[in-house]
Each structure stands twice: as structure tokens, then as C-alpha cells.
Length: 237
Image: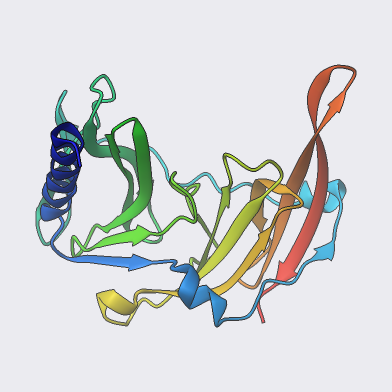
């Protein structure tokens, strides 16, 4: 192994350790291995008119926090959690981006980002505003999932990830929110769906048990790439 390549691996490893050190209490959820042993999300056909009946959840919301050029701090009840900001002007970088706040969940949303040897990775995280506990939601790709969408009473979180290097492909995950359980059990994988036939545009909740998905496929029409939309809904069993 060349010395330059070896040093890059060491640098990348150290960056990850340093980035995670400020979040000692950390739980990861969304592992594909866990979803494989759970029920699959089943869909039935819907339409645009039904989809338009329901509101898009505008979370996470913008909530002002203490920040400067290099860091931002999340004020939890247990402690103040400080994060190094992502600096993408560097060839190799590691850091976090602040996305906002989920009022009903009482959690801040962030992304954790790192790059080395021209490879870039990111993951989505939630920080409990009461305990400071950090929850990382695993993605099936190199990028972070789209911010999870809470059900009407935040009993579930649904999220999706469109594969960047494979058109018309996506993964949808469903997490159950267990408010009274230990931090490690606060979110639990419940159901999932994966396909290489369409991608997700948006998801709306109908209530705490039903949601509707706006999907698309990309096709060439008149020398231009266009999205062809379709709609499906599902009930949590």
C-alpha cells in the first residue's frame, strides 16, 4: 500500500472518530438487516386528487441556534451539544450541517458529512433536545436519507432515499416512535419497501396509520427528461 493512500485512510478514520466523539450517547437505526426480517410496506393505487387532500408536513422547522463560522451548538436540557460545521471547500473534510427542529418529537435534525480520496458520505441524525442522545438513521447509499416525515401525532416516522446512481429506484423505511422506552429503543424499524421501478417525490400522512406517496419515473420526451408521476397509499398493519 502506498504511503499517501495509507495516510489518507488514517486521516479519514481519525476524522470519523473526532466527529463522533462529541456525541458519545449514540444509537443507529435503519439497518437493512433488521428490515429484512420485518413486514414489507404494501401499496394500493391512488391518484393526484386524493394526494392533494392532505397537507405536506413542514418539518423540520427553522429554529435559531447559537452558531459561528466553524461550529453550531444545540441547546438540550441535559447538556449543550457542540458540532463542527462541514467545510466543503476542503478536499478532505468532516463535519455537520444543521437542518432544523421537530417540535413534536422534540428533536433537532442534522446531517453528518465526511469526504476523503474524493469519496463523500453523509448520514441523517436526530438529537434529542431533552437528553442530548444522538440517533443516526442509516441510509442504503452513500448519501443521507431525506428528512423523515412524522405522522400526525408523531407515532411513526417515514423516510425515503432515492438511489443517486440508479434511476427510478428508491427505499422507503418506517420507524415506530417509542416515547417511554430507553433511548436505545426510542426508534424501531417496523416496515420497509424497496424497488428499482420508481423514485419518491414526496410522502404525506393521512393519519397515524395511513400515508400516501407521490412517485415518479424519468423518461425522455421530445429530447427532454421529464417526470411521470403516480400515486400510492399504504396502511400500517
